[in-house]
Image (cartoon, rainbow, N blue to C red; front, side, top):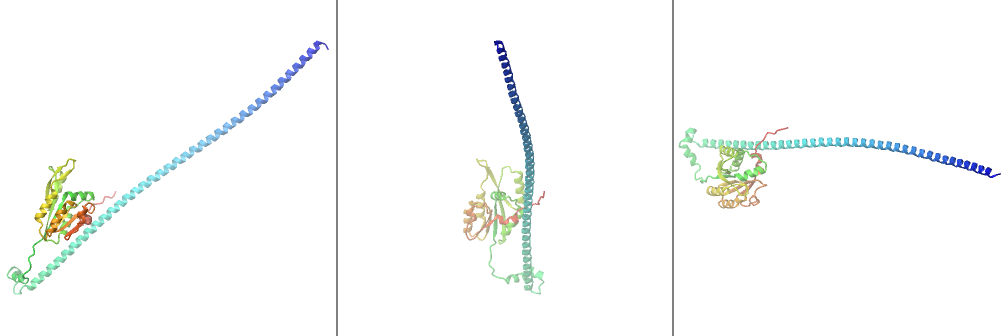
Length: 341
């Protein structure tokens, strides 16, 4: 074989090898492309599944939020209904309490009127018996009418000779207006001044007579309410003692000389055997109480159990009595008509 043939054979082999190498390379590339395609398809499928799961999760979350909002709204509505029901219940309870209070006041007044009726009936019966005795003691020869008006009277009087002459007693009822009004306001009371007068007079029933004084401060230019109140008291036969009112440096108003005026008037008027009914809770009256008791004057203080000075409320002495204002509420407060909503 010559050199030319050898070169041709080598070239042919190289060409074949080159072609064979390219085929192998192409086969390898095709395999890689095929694997890459499969991976890409798998990734797309996973993304789709993830997106589907995410959407489902979002849908579930939105549904849960809607249910939660609906539950919250339902609970809020129930709470609102419960609050309204509670308010209505409290309102009904207050109205029932007012009805009970009103009934209690009515019963108290009815009992008071019944007691007054029984007392009046007993008085009339006693007077009838006394009149019958007088008629029996009057001589039959003289007509009863003439016997009472003429000398027969002297005969009747002579049947009870040497009776001890008893000095009439007086009950001095004094109201410390400023203190009393303040306590009534703190207790939330609307005082019926007519009923108060009757109640205080009833406390003084053991005395032969009574006088009733109201001491209160009045502005230099009285307000309409002050004028109406003072006129109302005077119409009810209260003796009103008006005292000046001055403004203190702290801006508050103070009645001048009311305690002093009450003390001086009582020391002048109250005599041994008399009675003083002092409507106040002010402990400044303790020295006055001592002086009155030393004079053999019976003293009773009417004041709020909550707001009366402790020393005055617990004062212990013969001839002294403390009466709580709260025990008299059924007799001295207004009966208001209930307004049912």
